[in-house]
Image (cartoon, rainbow, N blue to C red; front, side):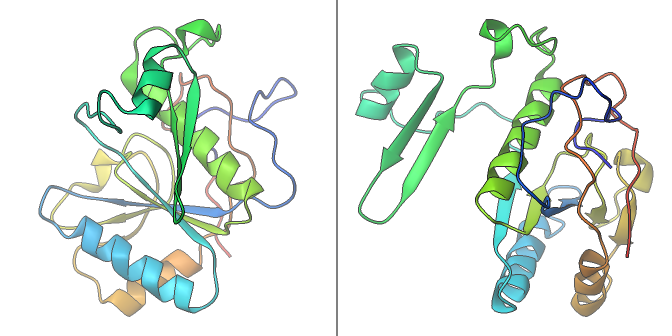
Length: 201
């Protein structure tokens, strides 16, 4: 399995990671189907087992991650490709995935391609930070093992459906537990978004 839908090759330009990649699973379904509630339960259950869990949310509408006029916003609008804010309790990073300045082939206005690249890069950072499970809400176009909620059509997601409908939480948790980490994060080429070689234990 890869996160951008392209097989790994000798010219793979994935972000480098040291060691094992985290397991990556998706949660998808229509609005109101309970996706976020399920993500919360999965995070709580696996964190209680001592696993380092990270989450990613696909947001379909444009938002500003910080307020205009704040220092971080001023850094970004001045042209910083990435800005990190550090408070006494939290740290956050805001990075642009408008790739026109990088020469990346995904810089053609394909919003889904840019989001797939941002997801791949986020998973690489999570791997470097020692996370071993990433739960992704949304991103139906990315070929990752997916828990499908509500009455969504399994054909609506690019990845293998590992649980669907309103299966009991214990069954969903075990389906997630059975997923192996991806072999690679894939290349930045988004031309084959439905390719997958998902592995299960």
